[in-house]
Length: 191
Image 1 (tube, rainbow, N blue to C red):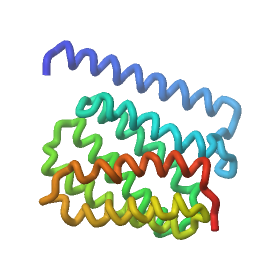
Image 2 (cartoon, rainbow, N blue to C red):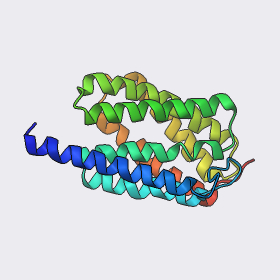
Image 3 (cartoon, one colour):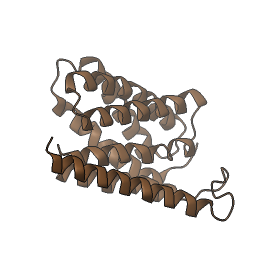
Image 4 (tube, helix red, strand yellow):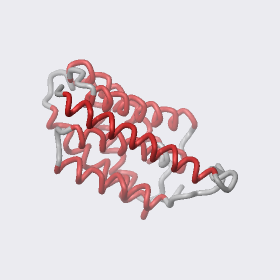
């Protein structure tokens, strides 16, 4: 890495740390802003933000920026998981999926070989399939239900054959997950 890139990365890192620190201080200024019973952002917004981010990820695919957006995309889903009706074990699978995908995203940003990161990501997709299918069992809307079943079945099954099948097979469920998340905000109703 060139000295200029390292220098720029240091300034960017310290700038982001400063913004996060100032943001947390401002949020905490009036007492207890993180009330666990208050919804700070609607499910509609939480569902649509990853869809918008996904567009930018596709437009800038393969770059460090799109990798960082991918990590942020998964972190937003942390706030969707507790809002959807599912047993605790299914929510734990959802959190496990996010954890593994974020870890793989960071590994990719750190130039770890895809042969190391991808099997971990595929293991996370099995957990994603468990979470999505379980959420769909408790969903009234049939479009969300059957789309979720399809996504979960595809992701979970592909994970077992990902070593021999091309990565392009993940494009369909990858795009459908984004649509499913966006639709959740508008169509989701518990059964």
